[in-house]
Image 1 (cartoon, one colour):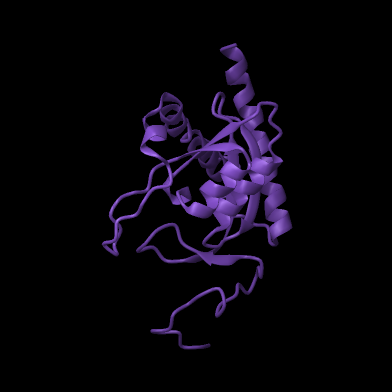
Image 2: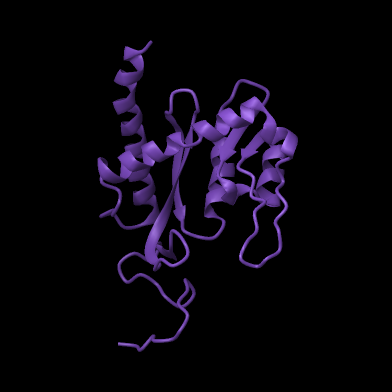
Length: 191
């Protein structure tokens, strides 16, 4: 036993005893960190079906890195696609990478006043934010929340029993496919 009182804990100083691939992560400020993976999904915004899913090790940039990889995997026949996301994605590296991929960044503007007192400058122009396509993307980006809710509660991945990144990734992709299959009869009823 080691006394860790008063010491800062990080992925460099702590490792899971049962799953060395898991990393310390927390959902928001004020919450404790737990050993976890980060699950990512790409949802098309018309029907709410998951078009791509993957699991990564939790890190500060895992969401943005996975989003770019999922966009790269996406086979789109049109010239440009739009990517809607929350304000955590409003950073120069992500928006620039989307523009490089010829994708429109419909990311929520993050130009509020942070704790530091220095106002952030959003990379999404006010003209883009006033447009109707942007408003639609911001409304429809919440479809991913229903998918994650189903995957956590019904598919049982709130706490996975599997160990290792490859196995957890497989289970997450399987759960995403199952979510699509559950949604199909409802979508066909309206067709």
